[in-house]
Image (cartoon, rainbow, N blue to C red; front, top):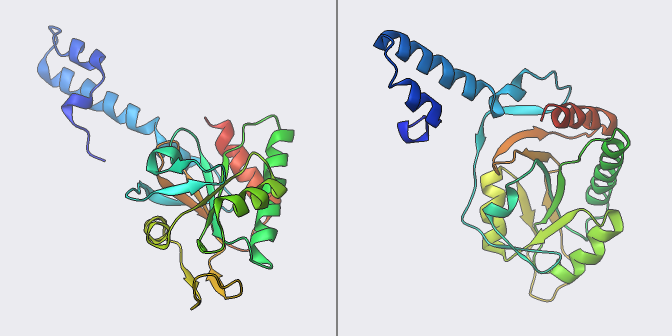
Length: 221
């Protein structure tokens, strides 16, 4: 990400008024900027993760409106403020979704046992016709009342899923149908506190390894 002069820490502006030679000031200025960039999100690339795959740079996403299981409106701003783990699925899923949510439950417990803060665990439904906020409220609370579940109309779900990089397919059906197929990926996506997608845990998921990687991440904060 480019650095603009109006984003510079005021302490650098004070230094630029000092009587030292300009080339020394320029050198100090560049080294200071490099140090700031190194202390940001890029520093986690040095951590020895076992299974977490980090993308070269964070990817922001926006332009959608979702609804939480608590009937609260969610957009890109709601994904900011803390690390989050995203999983896309649907409540009628017979195997992958309940298994993965149980894994997320175990990971959360493991982090708590280590006296570490957990990232937010967020389930995003790709099946808006069946997964109403009310249905998701019952579903997600079964796994963990602290987890989040999101739904929305088809265009908004497609918007966030395509920006994150999630593949899914909802079978042909009529409004009101209760039985139809949904295919979806089972990866877990990691977001940073800026609401950017920065990493992925691909399937199959090993609870202990993912918990260790997230523990390493949370300890580095």
